[in-house]
Length: 403
Image 1 (cartoon, rainbow, N blue to C red):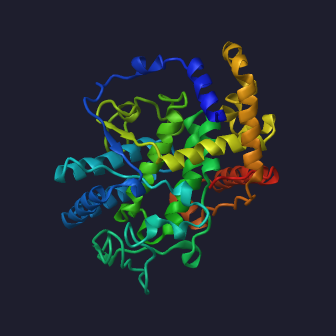
Image 2 (tube, rainbow, N blue to C red):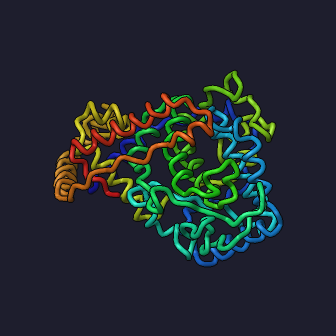
């Protein structure tokens, strides 16, 4: 019996219905829901369909249109709480256009955290998928689904990528770091910069080329990347924060559920809950092997970190530990105490038997990227340092990451 199986059962006992959902939701439930899948989990037929539609969208001028929109509204949708609502609506709009070509189109996501140690070695960045680094003086991309394309916005140029660190991008953010944000951040004022100043930025910077510009939607990786960030926002929302929206708006004021989304002029409320209104999609769970890694991560964190440290960085994991299960559940667990003890012992033995491999520090945002977005440098560096502090804690504890 695995510890996570016991904890899942215990958690189910304590779950309560989200009473706020009915009160906050004013849109009809979707009659049907389609699924956004992780890119590498696509079947060959799904990938063929998506590639053909993406190529048709380039042929018909949709890439420059989306690149133009993003560039024109750039200052209003970064560095403030418009970031998540705008990009959710923006990626949905791209997906809606794709469905005009074939109703079977959906926007996949790239789970970049799984590739954080050596990003350039990702299967995603190979000829069979989205292609790799550009070549030559203009860093033109010669393979992948956008091979040898000519982009027309903001001027005619070859589609380009220029990987950071001389073609070998530095590590970006680990699943543990993003998991910590999802568990510990309670407001959009916290969560938005924790994602925007970390995973969001380093992927754009280290892919480079068109992805480094305000017109970054020229690179289809933009859609993969922002679908993944949207997925992470949805995970955070489902952690008791479904209707949480606060923090600054561009040019002053505060973003709330009634604030209009930049460009789209639709209330933020309309994109907050997947499965309602126009947001008729869901995210597929990661493939079985990756779900197992996520499960193992929580088990290893619980074994490696002292309870007070675990509670600081991973409060949900700390609350789900056997020692902290509510009295209501404890009574039912007494009957299986021996099994629980044995499971915990087996997990501890297994974790401690794994080789220790330290988690590397992730790449930092460049001064140019910070200036381009009009970020406060001190705020960015504070967020980056918090992430490094977590890595120090994990490495000091000899935490053995499954990734």
